[in-house]
Image 1 (cartoon, rainbow over the protein chains, first blue to last red):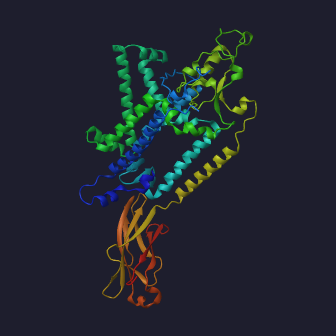
Image 2 (cartoon, helix red, strand yellow):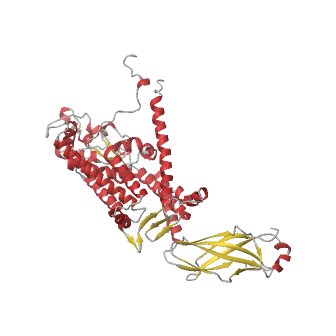
Image 3 (cartoon, rainbow over the protein chains, first blue to last red):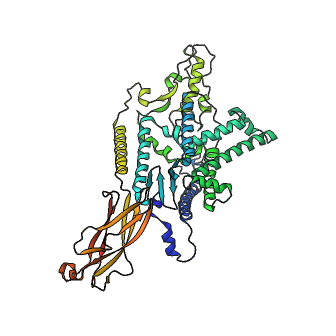
Amino acid sequence: MIFFAFVDPSPVVAVLKPTGTLPDRTALYSLGFLFFFGVCTLAASLTAWLINSHPRDAS
Amino acid sequence: MNSVEPNLADESYYAPHQKVYPREVEGTFSRLRVSAAWVLLGVFYVLPWISWGERQAILFDLPARKFYLFGLTLWPQDFIFLAWLLVIAALSLFFFTAVAGRLWCGYACPQTVWTEVFLWMERVTEGDRARRMKLDAAPWSPEKFCRKATKQFLWVTFALWTGFTFVGFFTPITDLVTRSMTFSLGGWETFWVLFYGFATYGNAGFLREQVCKYMCPYARFQSAMFDRDTLIITYEQKRGEPRGGRRRGIDARAVGLGDCTDCTLCVQVCPTGIDIREGLQYECIACAACIDACNGVMHKMGYPRGLVRYDTQHALDHQATRIVRPRVVVYGALLALLIAGFVTALAIRKPLALDVLHDRNALYRITDSGDIENVYTLKIMNKAEQPRRFVVSLAETEGYRLDPERPIFEVAGGEVFNGAVRIRRGAWEERAEDARSSAEIRLIITALDNPSLQASAESRFFVPGY
C-alpha cells in the first residue's frame, strides 16, 4: 500500500530509460511486489539455514 | 542419569509433520463456521461482479493509480484513508480478541475459510476421516488414483477460480472473462491468476494448520491480548478427570471416573491436531469443533453439556468474569474514536486537489509592455465521478493578474488535468522596494457549479535578479 501510494514507477523508469517502450504500471508494481516477496523469502531462508546449521545450545 | 537425558545439541527445532485428518463434526459452532464461510466466500466471489454506474463497484486500479470503493475514489494522495482502514482492522482484531479470544482465527481468517472448503472437497472425493487415512496408507490402485485425481481436479479448479477472482479486484472482471475466453489475457494477469491460485492450493490444500502454527504471526502474539477474562476454549479438568471408557448408563463417579470418556473425538475433529484437554495452546484456533464433538458425546452419555466449552479462566476458577475491563475499554474507545474519525474525514473529504508547478524552462519573461510574466502548470485532480468546470483565481490580486483573467478548465470525473496559466505583474511594481524579490503567490480553483468547493496551492513568482 505504501509502495502504491508513494511510488509511481513510470516516471522513474522514464528517467532511467528515456527512449524505447516503457513497461506499464501493472508490470512495474508486480515487479515491486515480487521484490518484497523475494526479500521475505530470503529472510525466511536465512532463518531456516541458521536454525539448521547451528546446533541448539545445550546449556 | 546422563544416559537418559536427551542430547539437546542433536535435537532438531523441527518436528516431523504428521498429516492431520480432521473428522467431520456437527453442532452449533460447526454450523456457525460453515455459515461464516458461505458469507465470506460469497462476499469475495460476488463483489467483483457488482457494478457501480459505468464501472466495477470495487476495483483497485493499479495502472490508473486509483482505488474505487463503491461511490468513493481513492487516489495515492488518499493513502491516509487506506492506512486508517488498516489501523481500524488491526484494532478491531485486538478488541475482539480481548473480548472473545480468537474469533478471527476460528471463523473469519481466509486460511480457515478456504481450508474448510478444501476439506469438504476432500471428504466428498475420498470419504470420511477413517477412509481418508486408509486410502493414504493403501498402495496405489485404480480407485485411489481416481479419487485423488478427482480431488486434485476440484482443488485446482477452485484455486484457479480464486486466483481469477482475486485478479478481478485489480482488473475489471468482465473484461478479464472476455479476454480469457479469447485466450488474450496479458502476461502479468496470467501470472497473478496462477500465483494466487497456487497460493490458495498450497495453503488450503497442503499447508493447512502449518500456516497457523508456523507462519502466522498473529498466533504468536495473540496471547498478549489475552487475560483471565478472555473467552477461550477450555476443558473442565475437575469435571472430566480421571478420564476413561465406560458403558452408557453406569455411574461414572461410582467407578472413580470423571465425565471425559476419553473417546478422543475432540482430538480427531481438531483441524490443528491438538488435544484441548492439555490446556490452552497457541495452536488452538478456537474453531470450537471440539466443543461440538464433546457436546455430542455428553448428550449421548446423558451428561450435562459443556465439558469442553467457551469460558474464561476466571469462570473456571469460580470467580466472576468481567467483560468491561481496562484493556477492553481502551481498545473499544480507540476503535470508536478511529471509526468516528474515519467516517468524519471521509464525509468532509474534498473531492478536489490542486498542484502548481512553475515553468522549468523560463523562470520569468519580460513582455513587450514591460510586464514580468511567470508561467505555471496547474495539475487539477477532480476526484469526483462527474466532470466539473473550475475557474482559476489569485488569492492576493494586488499588483498581480492572471492572463487570461478568468481561466476556466473542464476536468473529466476521476481525471488529472494539466492546464497552463500566466501570471503577470506590472513593470511599475518593480520600482517598489518590497517587490524586487520573488514572492509567494497562492492560486485558487473554484468549482463553477459549487463555489464552496475550492482548492489552493502555493508557488513562487520570480522577478529579474531574484
